[in-house]
Length: 108
Image (tube, rainbow, N blue to C red; front, side, top):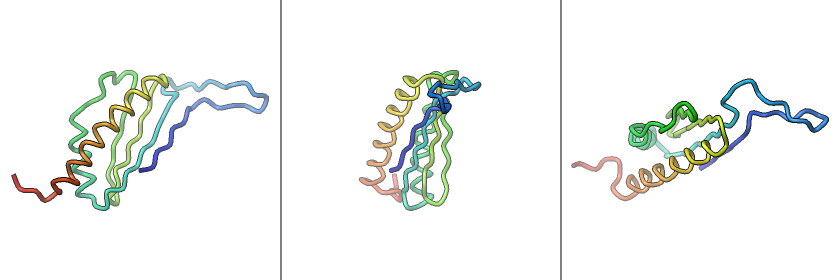
């Protein structure tokens, strides 16, 4: 699992912070390699039903490609990004463990 988190605020050479014009100042990217589009799509679909609780403060975009689930988060404040990311990782862990335990081809 690879993750990178950044703030959109830029630091100018004299040490002063240049504030961004966008309200979505904080972002984070997460990529998980599931080895197949099927597994990545199962996890994506399972998590997609839970929309962000504060869509005016946090945005989340999920994509599946080459067996990887990629997620991009944006938030207006670091605390909203942290809370959203933490909750997402909890759900991601549960979905991943379910696939590991029962397998994607499990018949109900």
